[in-house]
Image 1: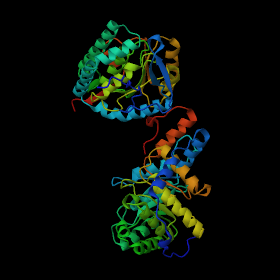
Image 2: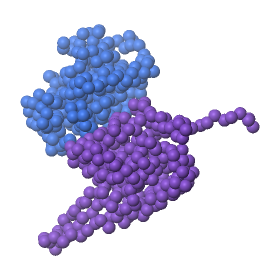
Image 3: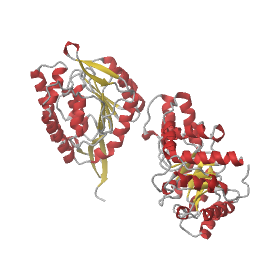
Image 4: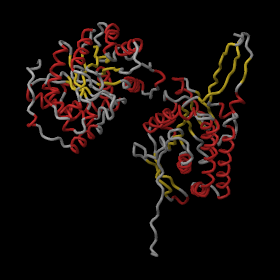
Length: 304
Length: 285
């Protein structure tokens, strides 16, 4: 279902978040026992949900190409694994990534709008989106102006996202809340509501440049916002935790939480992504461990 | 002062993992009995997951430990000897509880202290002893030198609780390797106390990890783990050594078999766990 005409959400209907309750609930998801076949299928699913990311000053076309190859065929010799959902790069490298992934089905995502701080003028931020889309990006990861949000200028954030969504055209829009800077779960919830009402296709926790990045509790708050929004409007919104997820075990915790909060419909890479730069190899090592029974070594996996 | 009998405060013997003393994640233990069948301790029975976590810790610690200077490694090993000496009484008591005579216990502790001092001395000497300048037929300056092999898994001698373990730990440590070591099943007490000594001697966390548990259960895991670079097995059973060699073949890890007895002091035990790097340097250009 496509986004309805955006209208500013009624924030008065939001109840406050029970911090202790959310953290306790999130902790419970880590206690599920996922073994054998279920573990293997969870690991394989997680690989297909990866937004393989490189967002560094030192990124070069060579590095991006290499990362794209890994995204398309994560485990050479086993075509049953992957491909990853997308590669995520800076706008200037979108063209390189587009060319590298070709028609493989791996999508190209680009951060834009003055990533990671979002502290530039709206005009420039919008033109950055148009540039990335023009270069072949399928998805845009935008950052919101956290300063304005904390200042209470909710309407301004809403308008900004609506404008960005327009600038995206056909491309999907992921809205990065940067939860590490939002101080409270209530602010996270408000930001999620505003982003979804303004037409976000995905809401995303973090840029990966601020600590703490994605955590289970904050992702739970956002998943619950998605659920309530879906109940009210019938529109599905995707979720992307990003930053700080580097162990396969943690990824499985996220999948458990996703399944138990939003249900099976969200368990695909159309509605859930991991924004990661170093999770891939741990997933692959765990998959090989499940297949061979031997604990693996990073020495035998490509460094991307 | 009260004349009531004081409640005994006895030590819980746990594992030594990544510089911490956790219980086994499996929650299992075995009972260690002393003379007249008295319970000495409930000893942690490590699982393969504990071993896995230990290897992760050892791998993480390796780059740092291998990069410390030879001088510092020597100082740290000497410090281990000092700490061991200071706690000699406790070690002797544990050895006696596990069946040694007082004289034998004292002898074993003294020998262990001396062993650490011995290997501390080797820290900046084995490199030059095992390095060479090689004659080659091209205009190159060609030289070889030893470098640490990485993560070493070791099964310590069963028959000797302290000296056996020390004789395995010291050469691994001085050579810049990190390790996961399975202590003697029948004499595990000194192993955990030695871990406390290592912990207070500036040996970085994760450099030495000590597990207690069953050999049958853990040896195959030691041999199979792809992230272990070498395996040292002290065993008199040909079956165990053979099993280790077969299972280790997958990642061609080095297997070093020894008899089930403390290793004699020798720099060759250091060399066993070194890789030789050869450099060809052009000359006359």
